[in-house]
Length: 480
Image (cartoon, rainbow, N blue to C red; front, side):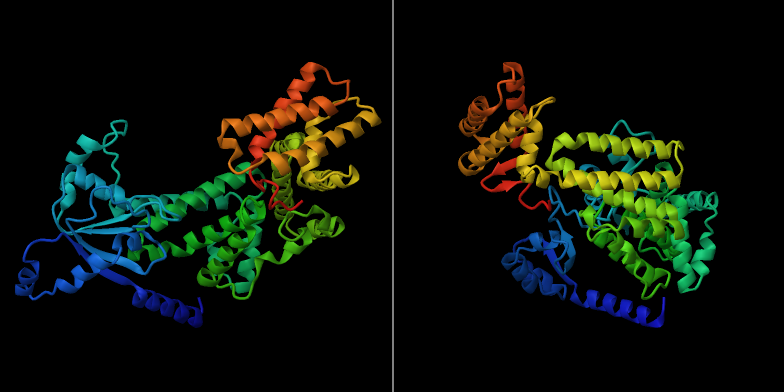
């Protein structure tokens, strides 16, 4: 990190500490003012806060500056604070109370996977007794919910070594990346990402290893020993977040922000923006028609092929997931996509063929995405039409099914999808009756009673899953 970055980081830490609020929360007793006064303490101002402020709610809020509390005989049983990271103990605790205290610090919250217990009086000599009484009997002997920092550090070293071995097998030199200057570092990180993205097993194994390193590194904080592990923890973190971003399984903008921050803070990549290539794929992933496939082919030929394939696969997956959510009859596209991925992972096709078939599939998916326009149907109407249609319909019967889809959707949305319609038996029955009535009157005569009944059930299940109430549905905010 450069000096400026160091300075800004320290300033932010100092400001965080200045903003931090703290309070005393203790049980009330008679004559407490005189009692504390004799000890040279003023309890009155603290009692005033305890009475007038909702300190419990403030402390549970992770965004509230009230971050430190001194507690005695309060906030014990049933007091749950998921963001709580550290507990300092200076009084004896036993059995159920001890177990509750440990569990309170160990609640999972956001990036927090464990808590820290600072024991000032050797309280954990009571732990084995408490575990014998209250802990899960299915646990192996010696498996406790707490571990000394020294054990966690040893586990962290082992996970880092395993991750290093994984990287070495793919000709990724982590030490070279860490020591490289800024521009070279970026290139080497991209090369490492490409080397890992050879198939799904490689990707999943690295993400698992990097996740374990991340979890254990956070578990040993704020131990000073963490500093020597930070460069590799940070590098693995950057590569993992880059892989996730390319895969398109999460909010790309959030991940890219995390990657850029990590690069700036830990391995000095000032001014570099990893997301520069997103425009090639269509902004925010969902509009496949904006992808310049010829430019994409050229980019694939001259740059890291596995990254380009993973990026395109992620874009397709994001769009396909959205399309299937809106219209479940498109599940065959999902099956075809998965079959293509399975063939590549099995080594049946190489990266060049995989990329070409991804482009062909993206084009096919783009045509499907526009089908509603050619059929003169909205996305909602098209979904009903696909559910109601059947093979070998004549042009006249197909048009009749379209009219039935439009009329049914209009009737349901204007008259039947009232507030909380799914919660009341009468409104559910009314929706089903409307479906049965309109379809009975409008489906072509080629539909047998058995097919008619099947279609009614399919459509009812669809509207139940997709329409929540008055103007609330999966289509309300979808980009179609």
